[in-house]
Length: 111
Image (cartoon, rainbow, N blue to C red):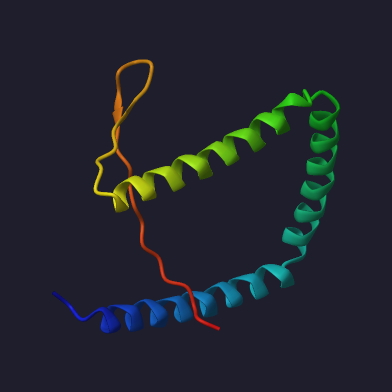
């Protein structure tokens, strides 16, 4: 198995290189007049589109989105607790498709 620190260092190196390229790319786009003109027109059109969409949007959509978010958080907590208790978890939907949990490990910077 490879050393986790070496892999982490390589990821950090590549992310730094990616940031530099993105900075150069953005700088080049900011200097391009036709790009700036088109970007301005797009912002105006997006604003018009947003106003039309919000005028005809049912209010229940936001409530449903919030409820789904809370239920997803709850199901994740239950799944983690069940895993820690040594239980296996399988779910089925209305079409008898089976689901199993997927766990992901990420790292965040310590302050």
